Image (tube, rainbow, N blue to C red; front, side, top):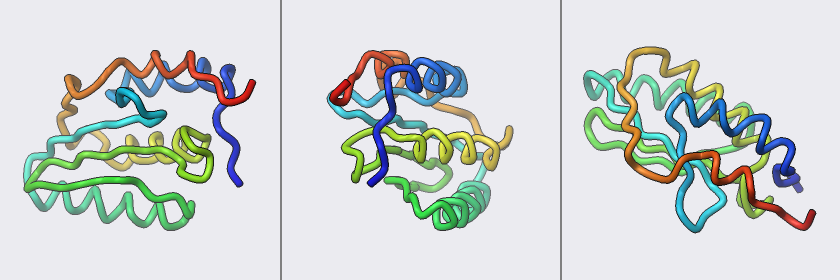
Length: 121
């Protein structure tokens, strides 16, 4: 089983992801990011590259696509919340998206609020 993020790991990793547009989902220990690409082809290309990275890591996002918009939620179900698998996949997805997409930032709470969650600590 994958371990949930510790408080120290949350404080170390989540603020930087918040700077790139990842946000907290209210009432869930999960992060979300919404990209708006220039076209369906760009969105699908990003999803294809991200799918390969997710498969390689054996960690799969919750996501949806409508035309040029890709909406991604990351959480680790076996950890009942965020784990390093989510941090690593979020970083990888950010690199794969590059500067091809616009990020919608008004979809959730700031990611920093998840720095305060504890999982049995």
